[in-house]
Image (cartoon, rainbow, N blue to C red; front, side, top):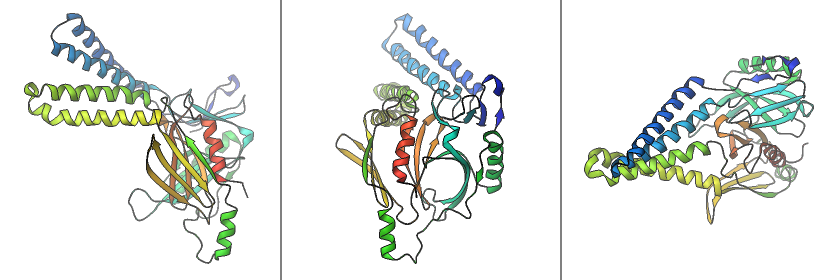
Length: 348
């Protein structure tokens, strides 16, 4: 964190280092090139149908390896400050996928403690996160720790670069509504919670990991189909693994198709946000986040290779929207920031 380059030459000061796997990139790239070379060698022989089928598997496998290598080799995630330009960038799946905000639009480095429910666990987990607060309201999520001391240390290191104040709200974010609130007070709070609106989001085919999912689906579909078609030769191997590969390919293809052509629906009303996935006439995964008492807080988060998303937080619950958004998608990072501001409603 806060790894300073030569700022006088316009180099960035890294607030959060990006993640990159150069060794994995070269190893997997080499494997992909070897598979493609093997496919070319088999194809030039113009041999039997079995050899051509094996060449097709090698081709899809080679592109699968190369797509994974691209993900591993890219400098994904991280956050940087550009002193000469006065900008802070939060990066997604690569150095070209960024949400850029002027430093003048940032107000503080916030240390936020909150309890979260993970999965089906009944007891919440205490999390301390470091976020950049913006004048518009939503925050930019940088780091997350299980220890408050680690979060404080990270915030101080970031402050040494940005020269912004470190803000640590007393206590934790409220998890439950105060029991003493009267019904008329609750109604007033709901009325102040912001306007109602509907929003339809569509990520498009350029979503994070979309490039890697396509060859994965083709590889699984082709491998499963060939194993089942030649079950007389493959025997137990084809009978056991053919259906698994085939169904995996169908699932990956369905995931890519949904992200490319489907959408997410968000309905925001006073005191509540509802979210659902839609494709054609189908609708599923409806979730509701209620925040009548404590209000809702939104933050933009980078998930590295899977791109950006919005996280709406209220109490111990989180609602996540538009996972996979990024530069080049139908929902660029700037639109995420605008939508997060609308979801929070007017600032009080």
